[in-house]
Length: 89
Image (cartoon, rainbow, N blue to C red):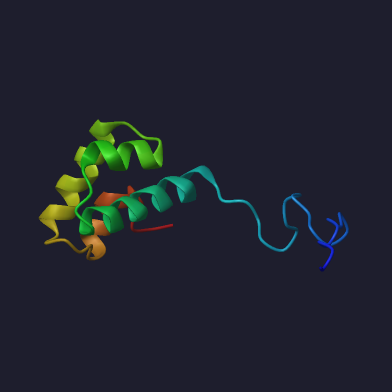
């Protein structure tokens, strides 16, 4: 019988990566909205999506309204509304 490998702290680390910076708050918010759109497409309920993403049901309803206005897809203008990002930087 093989002996399980011992956890090696030099190989496995839970420290933030110096290569991949942490997401900013706006990036995290956008990631939630994108995930919500995927879940809308799967037919999940608003309450379930809110619970899964840790947001209010009202936020999910607002995102879904914008998503539906886009025909279930998000074009450039809808994405601006959906993500709250501006057109110019």
